[in-house]
Length: 186
Image 1 (cartoon, rainbow, N blue to C red):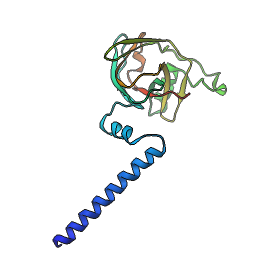
Image 2: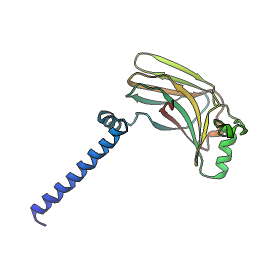
Image 3: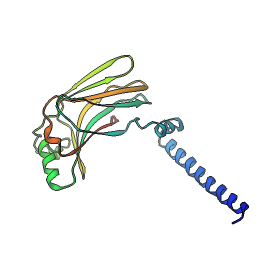
Image 4: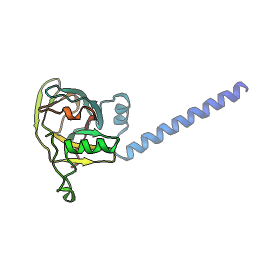
């Protein structure tokens, strides 16, 4: 292969990569993410929506950073994943079934009440959000999600979010659990 051929091949590869990047940024911009926001999400891995794997223990806080780049409300959810039917039955017995929709009102509440204390800290202040809500859940093909807290609109900046179980959640130990920080649905 001659030097001119190698140069043209490398130029074509660089052109294709740049075209893909431009189309990716343009596609995100169409859906409401400015190029600056896309750049921040590429550089930082702590911009919502994201999930954090946790091992929940009563009284022990699970802490994670969150970088807020747009001021709007966020929700904090507990995600419990299962792979086998036995794990699904166990997680449903611990957390209860989906009861948000009227068709699911007859599903029993879980044995483990989801009582958590959520603390949000930034460089200047601390905000505590006590949560004892057990009325929202969602059921997916491989998970049950329990709504924990609805966070107030936060200013742009870096926050530390700490979630502490206030009761015994040892029944969740054999299951994969994550905390999800996402945008408020309404």
